[in-house]
Image 1 (cartoon, rainbow, N blue to C red):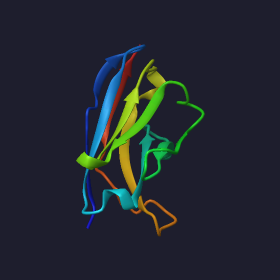
Image 2: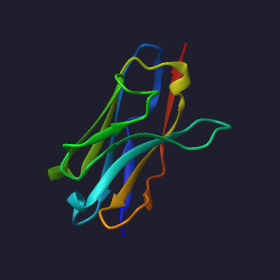
Image 3: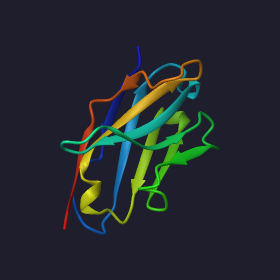
Image 4: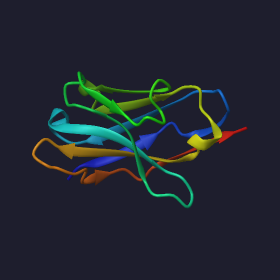
Length: 119
């Protein structure tokens, strides 16, 4: 069973930064592609960023490209999301997700961490 626990959310002013962390309780962290999603009030959950098991391949939503950076530290079973130049429209609950190398969809999700950006 894969358990994901996010941390690092909070309240920040527009233009500020936050770094989210997600720790995975899994034996073979490197078997999983890791990703971040977010869900704003009244909106559907949307993809933000993902990273391959090796950390060499990453992908971003256009809305965050150039502002957010995903990274992972396999020795610590941890994936990060560095968020810079935050804007009020980035306000959402941010979720960490894991997808096994043999799976087509993200099957494992954390409980989420709230990020609120004030104007």
